[in-house]
Image (tube, rainbow, N blue to C red; front, top):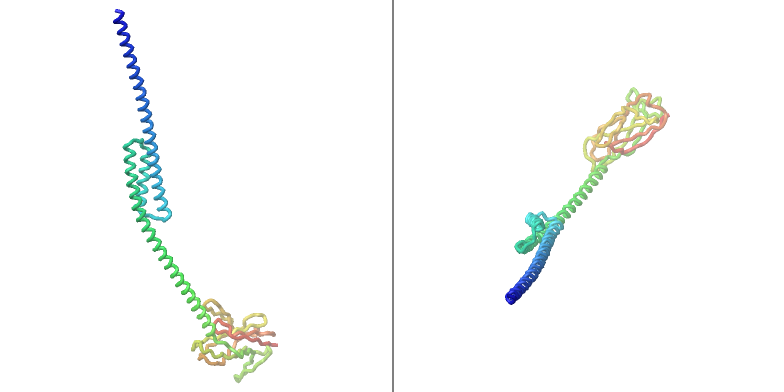
Length: 295
């Protein structure tokens, strides 16, 4: 009996030993498996982070090309949008082998697409630069033409003003006087304000080859010692000037010297002692002036 009992006890000890070894082996296997799984998960997370970084670099590439060259190409914008959506998708996904493989293939495809699109973008940029150079050249030509036109316009305006000034008919030998009208029609000069009936101005219109031939209106302005215009005190408006005058006359001018006299009707109250100023105008331009003194 004792022999059988000892035999069973030995077998039990052997069984316990085997089971212990099995448990130890299982523990070692479990720990190893856990460590391998943990390492694998860590590797997948690193690969996922690398994929995210590559996608962000792709987006930055597209942003740089689009912003620096101000391109509104739909293909570039669409590709950038797809990459952004893909980046958001992988950030929310859990890393696994199938996911990493799929995104690696997608990144390879996106890089090929980027290469093709950027080549086309380079062509567009080059074409835009040519257009910009042509536009700048055209703008420069237009500016030069405008400068030339402005110069010609200024020259024409200057010539027009010069001709206009040169075409004014000047007057010489202007003489202003007070006169007495006799019953027999004779006109007699006087220097006494109390005896004068009218005021007269006589002068010569000078020859001017470039003046317009034809009817001309010559205006006379007589100013008394009180600085009042005597006579009719009429008013005439020109383009940008106006003139008050005492009297006027119409003459037919033929570019040659022409003697002219203008008589001014005055009231006795306007004839006072002192100095009078006579001014002759061809249109708005003063062409002669003189003075006279009445006692």
